[in-house]
Each structure stands twice: as structure tokens, then as C-alpha cells.
Length: 184
Image (cartoon, rainbow, N blue to C red; front, side):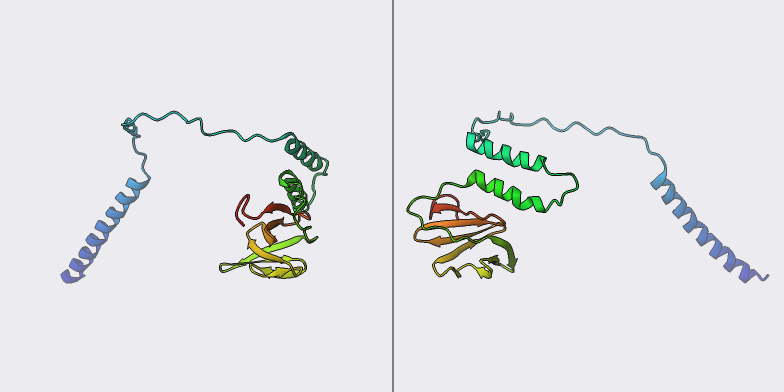
């Protein structure tokens, strides 16, 4: 071999050796065991932590609500294993609404006998399948009930100062005087 060629081969081998050593050191540093160090203790708080306030209360249920929950629980416990979990969804909603349903006031118009089947939202507009039609906020149902609110689980109708709140799968609405309770 000529001297010029040997010089080039030695230069290439020297550069490759430097790169190879650099990569071996990087791998060893990454995967080699390292001595464990303890983390320092967090700084002490500058202000003492206030004790919990007495404003938090545990909600209580009336005897009627307790009985309704017990009945709903018993109906679930009677179901066989391997049941369709979605078939109980409507039954759970019925039991849940039985707890919150108030007796309709005598001056309220009778509620239309419809069931809310589904609720959907496209962009910012809610719509629902109710009374066999697709309705939205502002539509009229049964020629006298105006849809004033739709959310994920319910539809609210208004007539004569009374609101009728239907939940998905529940046949009887919650009837309240408009403006009482929660907003639609």
C-alpha cells in the first residue's frame, strides 16, 4: 500500500473510533446503575392550614326517598347475572325520577303522555326525539307546549307558567311552576 492510502485509512479509522467511543459512553451512562439519592423534604407551609368548615353537610333523604331507593335496589338485585346493562338504564331512570317527582299541582295542566326517546347535539344546537318528532328549543309540541330547554338527559316544556321536565325513558315528567327549581 502506498503511504497516502494508509494515511487516509488511518484518518477514517481514527474518526470512526472517536464516534464509536462516544456512543458507547452514552449507552453506558444511560443504562448503568446509578446510586440513589433521597429527595429533599418539602418546605414547611408558611401559613397554617385552616380546619374544615362546618358548612359542608351530608345530604339526607326523606323516608319516601329512602323507600324508593330501596325498591330500586331490590329490583336490580332480582335481575339475573348476564343481563343487558342497557335494559336497566331506563328502569334506573324511572326509579331516580320517582324520588324527585313531586305530585303535580292542581292548577297545572295535565302533562302530555309522551316519552323522551333520545337527545342529540350538533354544533351548539340541541334536538330531541319526543312525541314521535325531532324537536328543538322553540318548537311546539301537542299544539300548546313549547320546548324551552334540552340538555344531555332531559327536555323541558312550558305551558301556562308551568314547566314539564321529561327525562330519557321516563313516562311521567317533573312538573314545577316555571321559575322554581333549576333552570331548563
